[in-house]
Image (cartoon, rainbow, N blue to C red):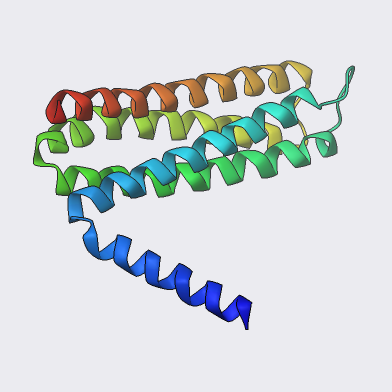
Length: 159
C-alpha cells in the first residue's frame, strides 16, 4: 500500500509541475536534461580511454571505447533535437541554433564518426588509434563549446 501511495504522489506532483510549465520552460528543461546526458556520456568516454591498457593495442581492445563513443553520439543527437526545439520556442535563439550551433555540432559529429571509423577498422595501426583518440577529445570539446555558446546566447536573451 505505501508503494502505491508514493507512486500516486509522484505522479500527482509530476503532473502539477508539468502543467505549470510553459512550452519555453519545457524546452529549456529538456535541453538541460539532454546536456546532462551528453556530459555524462563524455565522462564515460574519458573513463574508457583512461582504462585502455598500456602498450600495443589490438582492435578488440577498442570495443568498449567504440560502444562509449556510439552512446555519446546518441546523446548528442538527442541534444541536437532539444536545441532545435529550444530555437523553435525561443525565437531569439533560432538564428544562433541554426547558423552557429548546428554547423558546429555537425562538424563535431563528423569528427567523432571519423574517430569511430578509425577505431572500427581492424587494419588500423597504433598511429591511427592515437589520432582517433585525439580526434575524439577534439570533437567532444568542439561539441561542448557549441553547447556552451547556446547557453551564453540564451543567457543574453533572458537576462
